[in-house]
Length: 241
Image 1 (cartoon, one colour):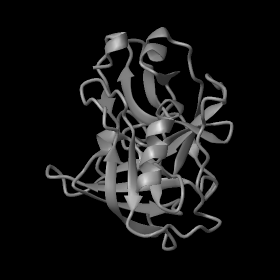
Image 2 (cartoon, rainbow, N blue to C red):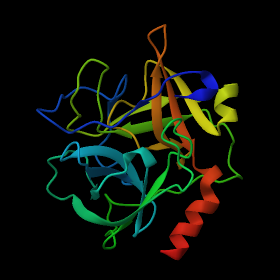
Image 3 (cartoon, helix red, strand yellow):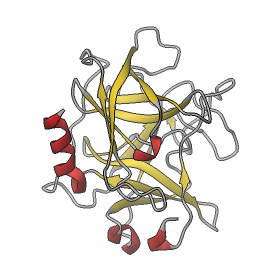
Image 4 (cartoon, rainbow, N blue to C red):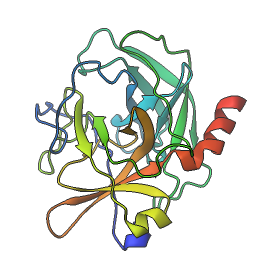
């Protein structure tokens, strides 16, 4: 449960199953192909289901960032991908996963994870890392966006075949600040399957898509793990491994 607001949260993970619906990330639109070269599709294998997917984003040749609740037995990542059917995408297995040591399943605290690739990503025009926000950046940027291949509406249960994107506005909510997360609210935002993707503001990754909650007025409250608050942990893992 999202304790500070007394709200239950919903993980945004979903199997990439069946025929994909050609709609939009909830309230958004299809991204310009390869305009977000840092975006990663994370393929996860779990005991419950042979294949599920999360979002992620490239930090350098060796590491991808995603959400800790996307943990699995094994992973592959897809880089340089706009459509799931793209033939030029890079597929790399993951050597080791590093969920945050203080991640809590009950309230999604520290919902962040690093994936060490088994071989180095090849940088191209379609495969590039994104910079991370730090403590010197705007503490509450207003112009932000999210993207992913997840659900395109609250009604369907299929992933999008193409990368979708939507603009979101962060809100200054006391319970979000107390839990060291960013929040946005409304009818537009990430859908199921978009967990682990980046909250991008001012050209940098500020947060990691974590969880959401249906509100009584039909809108949603979206939660994003703050990257800057985890910078020391991120640097420590990337230097050691």
